[in-house]
Length: 605
Image (cartoon, rainbow, N blue to C red; front, side, top):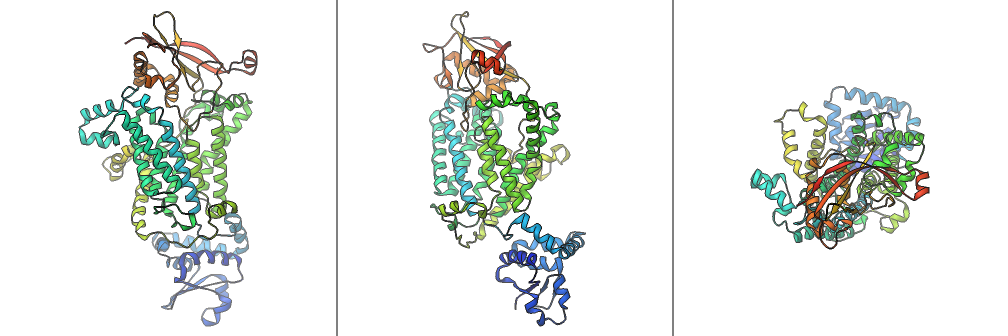
């Protein structure tokens, strides 16, 4: 009445994989060792049963070897594609049957290999607990991102800020027209771009983040978080154009289709299983992030990366060093070369473990997390490292988590819940769309048909930042120019503005600021690498300082003109480097600096 899958009951390798297939096919297929049922099929010699698995179907059809395995798995609807490929892909049938014969002849060795790669359990893994932890971490990251913007948003893009969002939207509307402008700049601030509206969106993001953390209405919360943060990144212009901003948007969008459909908090065991398609798409995002960061370094042709000396400069030339950066900069060259080689291994080779069997995947997770912790300790990169670690945790299944965590989350005995079937009708098309769009940038538009649906779809969706290209530090900066801004009321006595975190006073030590990101301090690092004319926002910064804008001066550590704004502003470019141990012991300075040239002319209103 049902298909019968017959295997060698004395083979540990067979028993291990049969248990895996049983979880997939459920009660649609019966399984039995040939030692118990061979007498029912006298036409099949026992030697054949021992040599290969057989599938005996109700109609009398008998298949063996790789075909029997794939026909068995085809009784699980989600695995029918395997049998289709076996039948229709040229050469695949021959290859799979050959591979099956090789494995069958060396079962003991492959059994040990399976044990080493997968562990004792090779069946479909559950990810309810992993998803539960991931979504809480994502909620915390969103909370950090929105809370970090609250004290800065008015000074950056408010009405009296450096780049008022209202000016951006007005210019877009005039030049592009209403509909096209709204498509290219998708933001809630088309409705209202006032300072209270900016604050409201940030506070709404904080409230929605809290809802996600406690597990309250997670789907609406994730949709609201993505819309709010997209609105801020569009309105933020240069100040919210960092790779972790687009990484958070892409992760947050996928999380909408990954979260459980519950209105109230619940332990992981009470939640339906997550979409496997979206899980693998999030893993694919992690792969693109890590592998892309390694590839851009190779493709740039930068000699510092080619000869593995980049880290001899990195700790002192990165945007915002930490106190540990000074100590690591003093390490010998051999240490820096070793770390650079290790970095290339982590970024170019370890990401392939994402697609490896379970135990190798866990090792890959551990290595990438260690790498991110090291970066976090030696550099202030906002919430980037925490977000990357959250993506790394998606490589783990529930069985990896320690027993005390499972007890804490009341997940000792997960209930066999199935996801809503209608969700597949939404998640699968979304997964296919995102997968193809994520491949498009790497194919280079010049080699593709400009009118093709893939290129056109990518360009139409680009303003929503659903799919992005990643790659950090393609070219290593070997010197550290810094801009020192000074003001004067009489043109003779000049007083320096002090920033909260970027280097200025040579005796002021680097500090830990991550996961908060002082976005003006960061942009000052980029501005120093070019010139004032190339940074329109810098000229607006100078204008706001001359006007004495309290929103802008609030972004600084010290405003030397408390009684009223200066009449003149000037900016000078200095070359900064870490002080040597001897220099620091002598005068306590963390930095040494030398004046290079004026950064811009003396300005007045």
